[in-house]
Image 1: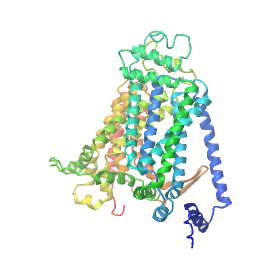
Image 2: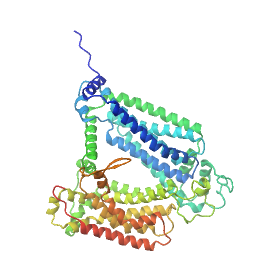
Image 3: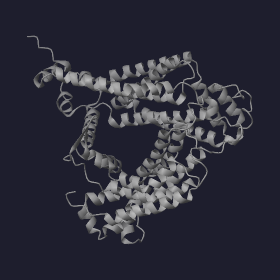
Image 4: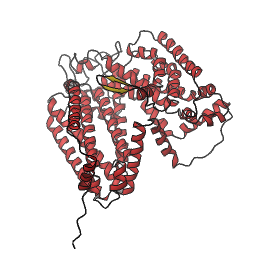
Amino acid sequence: MTPSPSPSPATVRQFLRQRRGSAGAVDRYVSGFGLALVAAIAGQPVSSLIASMAGQTTPARMSAGLALVVLAFAGFVAAARAAGPVALSAPDASWLLLSPLERRGVLGRTARLLVVTAVVAGALLGLGLLAALGAPDGLLWRLAGALVLGVSVTVGAMALAVLEQASRVWDGWLGIALTALVTLAVVLSTAAVAAQTARPALTGTGLTTGTGLLAGSGPASGSEWAAGTVAGAAGVLPAVLHGVLGAVGAVAAAPPAVVAVAAVSAALAAALLVRQAWAALERMPVRTVLAASTRTAHVTRTATLLDPGALTWIAEDNHWRARRLRSRRWPSLPAPAALAWHDWRRLARRPGRLAAMAASAALPAVLAQALGITATGADLPPGMPGPATIAPAAAVATPSLTAVAVTAGAVLAGALAVAAAVAAGARRDADNPALSRLAAVGLRPALAARAVLPALLTASWTAAALTGLSLVGALPGGAWWAFGPAIAPAVAAGSLRMARRRPIDHSMPIIDTPGGAIPTGPLFWALTGADVALVGCLPALVALLTPPDDLAGPLALQAVTGAAALAAYLLRARKPTAAG
């Protein structure tokens, strides 16, 4: 008697779908209408963005924009590596993965979802690449090349993540890629900032070589401008940065044929990696898929149903679980300071996080460079080929208020993120009020002691970020760094309020708007903490949006407002309940 052939994964899934019922016409209509609505809403902004990419800018600005694109790609690679990336839903991981079914068929749906995710991320990355480099000619051809290149690198990175999950042979390749990407972003950022701060070396009516922008000659090509910059800034910038600016200018001015060859080569390399990853699905270890599925399920459930703040605890516990710590004698401190010393020790035991905080202070300056923000009245040496001499005057006449607001928001968001990263002690006190009562320290003295470290880090980080903005010419002359210590109390209060907030209250009402329903529970949860920081930093934000002639008044007002915000928060602080 011939045994019946084993069913395929597709047959099993079809059987399960029949028992659950198939999607009806209304479901298909809603899905199609939603896609059409998204296309209609995003069509005009995307087309306007693509049209604004025509033209060319300075290599320093291109280098800054390219650094942000590289950092975004590094974030995508890190997210793919942390996610698994091959994971299944709980039913499939419990039943289909452990069954005798063909493993490639079981994981095929996840593989297709990963490809779609990589394609969408690659399209966004390609648009960012074209926005950073510009299109001096052949906009459509360069757009197509950038999209193909962006999709190729994201799909290839996703395939490499799958290969690393499937076999130890590929283990470590993504780590090497991440290190290379971060190093490249640092080099590009350094070149952009150094080129802007070394402007006095460029003098005369044009570039010193005579190959750059001559008076009345109109915009020069990217390679010509880069060559002139390298020769004119000799002795000011290191030779490596000269080469970086020259390479960026040459890449931006590459003919469409070279762009096509690069795009095709990247597509072929990505196709090869995808083929290897598809073959590796058949030998994917069960333990790695189960671990990724469990991790993804916990993250999804936490982010959508419970408390998104628990994601930080998951990452924190995973970091400390496998580490052995050495005990040291604590210094003799007052009771509130001794209670807060835990946060200082935690930060000292993670020097990598402290180094990342210090390096991130350069991001606002790089963002301002990429957006082409130049402060009105900034000192430009005679003959300096600024943006107005490289790009059309209408395109760079005055930086838009949106670009300035984005940069100011980046400064405030970065300061709040740095402060919140060292407020874990306040979060633990709020989560376990019974344990905090055993310390025999009052709530207000404990919060005041815990606010010292976030305030110091905020002051240092913001002062460094504002100094970078001043160096690249995004802010006029003045002691802008002094806003760092001035906003530190308000940001520290916001970080403590953010750390002590309760989980999302999903019983709160939903607001119906023309754009869809807005749940107020997650909205209020997200604004908790940021509201205090925003109100306490209003004078600094106003000064960043509309730089005054004299900083003395805004600085004094910000110092008073910041101190008042922290004092008001400490006075109104209440002990959390055991259930909250």
